[in-house]
Length: 437
Image (cartoon, rainbow, N blue to C red; front, side, top):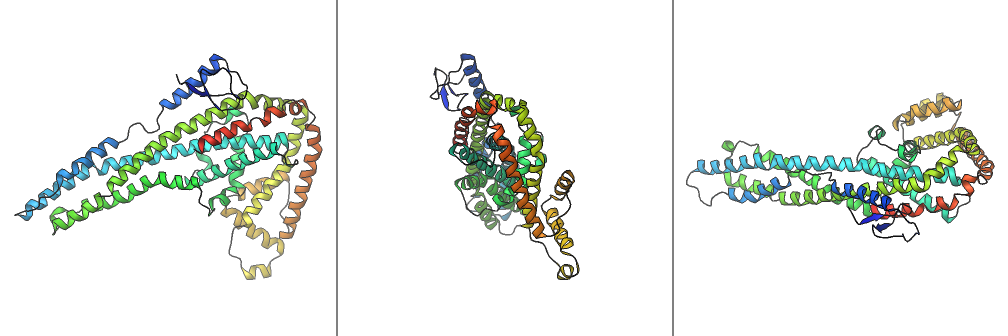
């Protein structure tokens, strides 16, 4: 049983022997033991358990035994020894290091999906707090802005991971987000379809996170190139090699990079296992603290008739904002425009023809049409009409929020839980600190 656990109220590190957390929370012995057991299971699990690391290390140690003699009286003897060396490399080094590279890459992809799950939870929780509890158009204050910061952080990291690892929405359909009782999957879908994904993917500023990512990828990248080079050399027929010593010298030069590959893969394996524990622990903190602090508030809010009415009446406003965001993302895409088509067709025809092409390029044509069907709206007559639609829709949404927010701020679920909701930022702060170490 682990001595170091976390507080179920604020997420801060705590000792099993501590009676009270610095936030004032007192946990029962059974609750502390439960958290300790959870952390013990996380620490005992390794994403990479059986890798050919030792086999590669042993093969590298044996390669000097296959060094060619300084003198040969017969060319056939040199070819024989070279062939023996090549066979050893083919049988004992290339398969093992190739397997190791594949294991590391597969584990890295699994870890990426774990990251998506955690960032998705943070995104879903913060968006609910901002949009449903505070109201997204409210006057900004410190309580509100801190959740915006964590929302933007999770949105950035989520988009980046899904871009870097080429993860699609279908790849995370089976992810269990149900425990927090918020439509997290919908938040992720909106993030990827409403501009953030492409904007973040094209960023040109290199961050510490980017540098760490490059460092952890270098093992697999080097391994792929070195293995390819060595494989090409040892696949040659030794009987056809005229200058055995030159061939051996070239092979040794390639093999000299293997020690770098070995070190890089070993470091990457350690990093993956360490980060797996880090994200699993952060996931446990989010889930435990959410269930203790926020879930009762969410459930109380969702049962309130004033909120239920607000949530239902808000749907078309959200759909319009979603439609606008998809249009704006599409209009940033360059398409080839025909001069004669523009000249001979109406403004409405031209606008919608090229909008369709752009929507198809960002895989949003069907989503866009579905929104139009739900809203029972027609196509825009021009770019000017689209901009007017955007302005009017936003103004109507702001007025709607003002009217309902005044009512929502008076219901018990809001009045009695304000401080409880605000203090959840301490949990998010702790989780962000953990995963950015």
